[in-house]
Length: 447
Image (cartoon, rainbow, N blue to C red; front, side):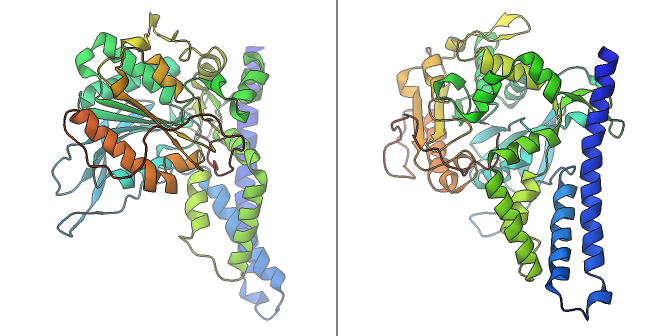
């Protein structure tokens, strides 16, 4: 039975790759044929549409197996000079690296920030705009998770406990002056990693912890994502979602939740929006109005670039974070050792939620503050961003205009609690966190 399931998984994995590869080839063929000079004297608009469809199709399917580059623009200093940003590995591990964005010819900034990127289908480059917005004011590090299909089976397993231990090692390496920002999926595990440090190495705890749109307590406000996890049993998820990496990649034989399968789920959540976006792009290309760096290409080059997750990480996340609610119930364990979130005492904790977030609804993330019983009330705060969806609270307009200034204020207050901090934004910091009755649709990337 195990042999049959493994063979079935490989066939399914390679079948998806074959469909993707064939679709890319069809797009390239349509583009080449319709762009041939032989049809130049035939003034039929269908040739332009065919060529445009081919260009969009070829590019879209090609992006699905390419890891995007960071492409961080130079940082302009106060003296007007451009400073090039170098992406350098700080710590290298089999399943993910700690990456440092070193700004050339600039002294290290006093604000040290670790961005914990999601491992939920997209690469860490999903946080490119977040990194770019923080670099002028901070020394930025990011967790750069690897695609499971490229990790040999000999490297072993990687589940939620291994993920948490990676975070513990990264934070300990950066030191106690680190400000940790966890975006969506890693929020509960980052909270657990901080608690583990508080008990094992109190002097290595981060200075502040900012949790953005994370499922600390998934039952606090149900969404389509949390309902999906509750509808299916673990056996059904294993059978339906898990496949074995095919022979094309270094991780051949590894059991994974494939990126292409995840992408199908992402698109299905807002199918009408995506269909309209691609139709508009095809017609724009046919009219000669498309460009390499237009809004569509910038978004979908990132959105369509997906990565595989190890099967054990996906299944343990669903079971322990969503079904059993180990973090919400403060019953999480790492290598058999209980993790008590109440042990966190010296870390300033902030939660950020979007009122229209349909991935991690308001109420799920702010639950972290009640779990942090050892943190003084004055070191805890929350923010609910009106009108913001999931993507907007860490990379969109809401992040740039409202949330980022609040986060920088919070970091400064954690560093100098006795010193007054100049506010970058007027208005209250903590607002009502009751769920919005009309979730928005701008959560176009599920993390």
